[in-house]
Image 1 (cartoon, rainbow, N blue to C red):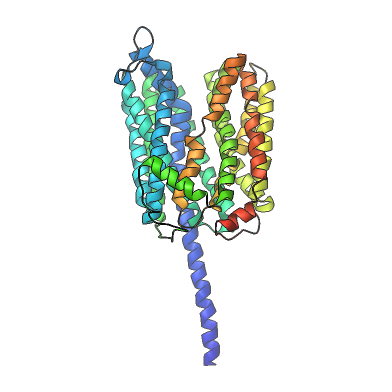
Image 2: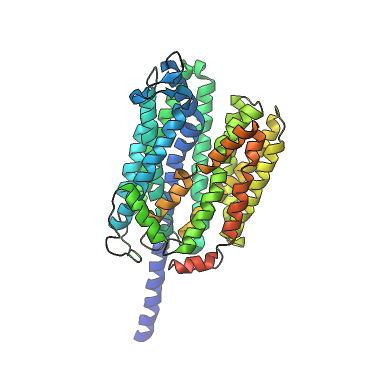
Amino acid sequence: MSAEATDTTGPVEHASGRDDDAADRIREQRGWYFYDFACSVYSTSVLTVFLGPYLTSVAKAAADADGFVHPLGIPVRAGSLFAYAVSVSVVVAVIAMPVAGAAADRTGRKKPLLAAAAYVGAAATTGMFFLEGHRYLLGAFLLIVANAAFSVSMVLYNAYLPQISEPDERDEVSSRGWAFGYTSGAFVLVLDLVLYTAHDSFGLSEGDAVRICLASAGVWWGVFTLVPLRRLRDRRTPRSGAGPGAGAAGPGWRQLVATLRDMRRHPLTLSFLLAYLVYNDGVQTVISQASVYGSEELGLDQTTLITAVLLVQVLAVAGALGMGRLARRYGAKRTILGSLVVWTLIVLAGYVLPADAPLFFYVLASAIGMVLGGSQALSRSLFSHLVPEGKEAEYFSAYEMSDRGLSWLGPLVFGLAYQLTGSYRDAIMSLVIFFVIGSVLLARVPIRRAVAAAGNPVPERI
């Protein structure tokens, strides 16, 4: 009788422990979702909609008779200031991301680094309230700081994914994170558009309304970052294959080289990263050039373009969740390949889209929304299976640079195609090659073997 009691108690306690672990994991996951909820407003309202045109108008107000401003004595066309500031922010981010990633892995303290990056970015964004008059230098500086801090924070945020989710649930968790982000982006953008379009009713000038929209994004970012900071926890993990000095964080480029050298030990992981770099470059170029294509080639007004951005945000929520379910049935790799087929069809449809036809542009925006969040979420979750344990932040710094720091070839090809042909339609068609080559490269990666080679358990369906 005593032996039976002992035998019964053991499994019950073990099951209770498993239940506690599952509850803690779900609690962390829910906290993790909220960082996307917090920071996505910056991407949507600040970068995509309001800051570019407003900073350009401030720079033009400060320009000389020839249309130039002179930051640090360097002549810069006022209309180019925003693009140059974004480019400088990418350089700063490329230097900072691998250092932050290596430091997080070495110390196991991702949360303080995430907090520092998030609140630097949120403070810089909130400071954009003071961007008025001729303060174009302040605007450029705040943009550089906010954009670089945002990129660093995303490295640390993404690096939590393999630690807070089991292999078989990672696609769903990643998709929910993207869905939370697109939900907040859409919600705040609706509020911003109400304020912007009815600014006279609130006793505000158009500039005042824009500055409030910019600053409120920073406040939103800072407030909702408190949720993941309360729920996520730091954990030390053994660094897989760490050699002499492997944990030392050095200058950004040196750390980046060290990370890439270590990744050579995992060639299949590098193969996936190369495929992602190519097809994601196509995705990012479609998104960044859609407004230019809509206004210059299709003759659409600003209200139509902003409404289309809002439509993309709303439908991206359903798209991310829907593609997460497809991945459970067909595997993440097949689902991503299917999304790349849809991206190719989107580009082909854009080529034949008639001018002065907002309805057709909205249909195209709807298609983009349905595949945008899902292709990004599943790419992130798939890469998380290919990262050796203990090197999550370091490897995700390389992933984030593929996502943000190296997405320059697509815009270059787009620009050269327009320069050579004088047609935005020919320029948009040039992007097909990114989805075709990216699909071929991804199809050639043996994902199951790549997961095993990274020392991780292979999910039943991937």
